[in-house]
Length: 380
Ligand SMILES: Cc1cc2nc3c(=O)[nH]c(=O)nc-3n(C[C@H](O)[C@H](O)[C@H](O)COP(=O)(O)OP(=O)(O)OC[C@H]3O[C@@H](n4cnc5c(N)ncnc54)[C@H](O)[C@@H]3O)c2cc1C
Image 1: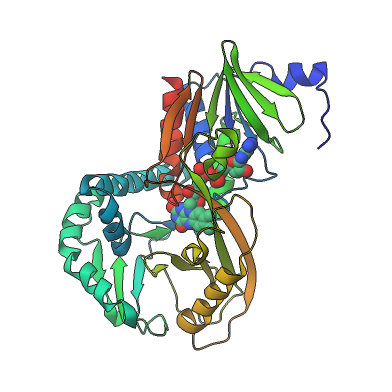
Image 2: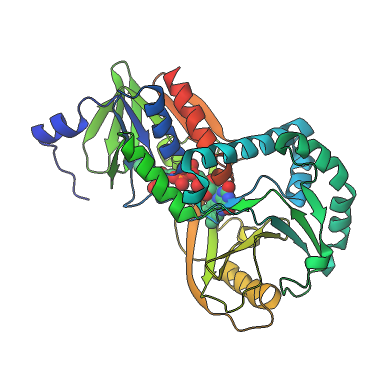
């Protein structure tokens, strides 16, 4: 983009009198902006979004309304204390309730079809480790969800879905799924209805917090000055604030063409959660496999990875739909924000700047809550 000057009219009419600028219009940025208006309806809240659409993870995810499968929680327990693990589960659970309350189940197309964890013939040992602890997990997580039996073994369903080489299944009965596109369209509508202004195509290259407010350097060479800023750019955050402890992680996703008589219904986690798939509109959405090429996938650039795409396609044909030909409709990628711990960063970065980033692949669940927390911190 060739730099250019702003006219007097543009400065006066578009960028004067902004009270709060939110950078990024994903789940977090939109939830934050809506909450900022809720807290103080009269203030002028704008969102600066780099993409024509929200272009990170929020419009590109799998739409699992999930709060923890058994292997994920056992894995978390190897590097986090039990209290911290349960705290994350509770945050995900509470976040999902906030999302449902804000957007509405109908607009989310929310369906509680359950979440299943698949174990193949190589994974008998890990399955038994999980099965032995189901009672304990049901007790501890039941206190959070109010459901006395969240997890149960449902091996009798292995044949029902038509999978190959799946020996065991553990069901999370409280897991649901949402239509990601409808969720984001509704969040954008709610924000606009509350008076939030959204500027698309507005990439922010840098920010500087000074005595007279925060200067935002735009991709066009001009600078906007605003009193308060909330940074909600998740996996892209180090491009703006290099000192933040997070890194981007790309995820590959494939969508099949409609599959006649599709038996798969629900959310499914495979290989300790590194792969995930679900039904949507008579098709399968399948993603993951980042663990096969971790270093290459530590990137904020969209784009394919042939190694991972081949593994996803093999999983689709060999395990998920072994008995019928399946055509692939499309591929896409999304960018996660990860860090050393599975905890978002919601903190005051400087006097007038709050960051709400590093959603750790859980943003459908916790994004609304994290956005609201960021907004409250900025207003405090
Ligand atoms: C493939 C995939 C599958 C997933 N599946 C699930 C799931 O099933 N369940 C679940 O809970 N979570 C899932 N997630 C995670 C979830 O989607 C994210 O945690 C969540 O969307 C993060 O929201 P966000 O608003 O923080 O970030 P984003 O949605 O990434 O939004 C950040 C926004 O900031 C904009 N931006 C970036 N830099 C700038 C800049 N310099 N200036 C202006 N704008 C900028 C971007 O364009 C983007 O729109 C998945 C993620 C991926 C990628």
